[in-house]
Image (cartoon, rainbow, N blue to C red):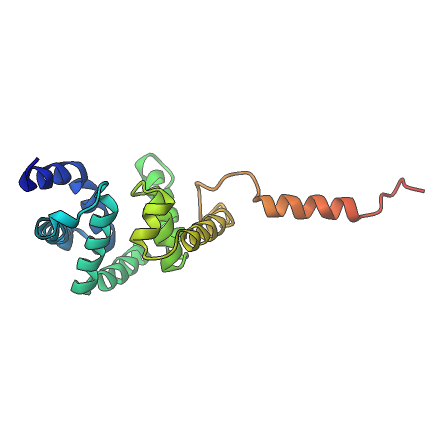
Length: 189
């Protein structure tokens, strides 16, 4: 396989996922440019692009976005815009929009690192090892971030997180069980 064929294969396999990653971080205005620059870098360094290429491509896309310094500005503008949107009614598509807005608000309450950990796994479909590479941290640290993010989302009140599991977190169930064992029973002599 020639270098050109390898790049075409990598592009066919991963361009949509790199675009989704860039779109999430910098918006539609810059996502195409980020994808273009990422694959231009892959072409220049095709001999060092590993198999599978997705983690390397996402790290490169992150570097491109950091160099452009636009992601933070667009994220804050989007957050301000969402705060100004009216409360939709609960009928049809409006209820779906309302649920999604509640989920976005819950995600915004997470720290940047926790949100990124959750989205790398849930949105981009990476395993924790690959996601840790993209997040530039040790796999153990990444798993801790992911666990904290999941715990914070599951502890959100239902009005803020409609996708929350109805089951209480394990630590709460264990605490309550320990308390009930520690209490003296009224019927005990």
